[in-house]
Image (tube, rainbow, N blue to C red):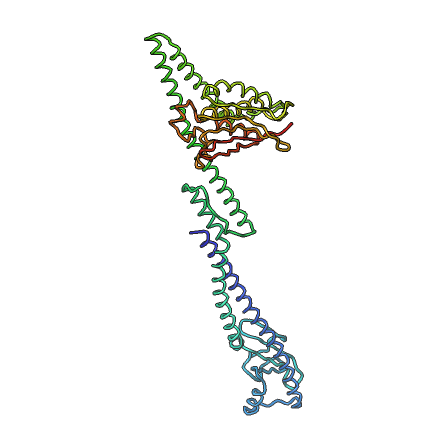
Length: 442
């Protein structure tokens, strides 16, 4: 049986039982009240009977006509007794009962001692059947009220049970949905300020967090799947090239061409593993960033000097003109910022066929905007949002041919996020690209 049905049944049983008990006590109270009022009435009537007898001068008659006339004067069945207690008139007990008023299961009885000649006692009796006849209309009114109350209680009991259990039913369904694999259950329509409403909101919050966590785990699983596939491919290519180069060297001896190929693939492997190590530390090492105060001019100049020969070899112009000769003091991890600059300039030189690659620094109040802009082919808008995903390439085959791993911008993004910064990308197809970020001045 469902909770709603149990609650409805319990509520109805309690209310109907309460109604029955109330009605029973009401009938008992009304009967007792009527009996007490009747006893008072009989006591007054006994007084009137005493006065009547005294008006007769204490005389008493014995013929049937006068007896009948006497009985018709009073509403209750009178019985008269002489001084010895023997009944001399009426249908009451042969011997006079004790004086006073009594109420029992047979009816209401009043016995009074009088001083009216031969009559010493008066007994008045009102039977229970007459009391029940007087009580019958009241009893039926109570029964009708009971029936109407029971119907109303049943209706309101069902509504009350529905109101109370509605959030429980929704929470139960939400829990069942979660058990069935649905990680989110909306309970926003359960707007109550009691404990059940608090429970519903807690379940919804828990469900929302579970939903977000499941989505995050799904994204991580997808990234991990792509990660293993891409790592396998990235490692397989340079290893295969290395083996091929070694085999050629074994057959025909070493030549500058094959030695260069050997060096290129070895460096590619080193870059891949360095980038992977950076990302692994970002994911798992709370001490990934070690901030200090340093002069930004140093990593900028080192990066410019390192990539100037490769840029000139491609016919590119690599520019870096410091806006000032004074130190550019910032608060960051110097080694990681140097890694960011290295990756950005490396990408710009790699994918710019002709024109210029420029390193720049601009003042931004309490910050320095640092970046690299190029005159390369630019990037389609559909790719911009995913450029910092791990192993993501706008043109996979072309990127691999250029020696890229697809981790460079992912590394940049991770390092900047660890600094509380973000990578801003301004690009359009045919108009080159600008990658920049902010560093706090120190």
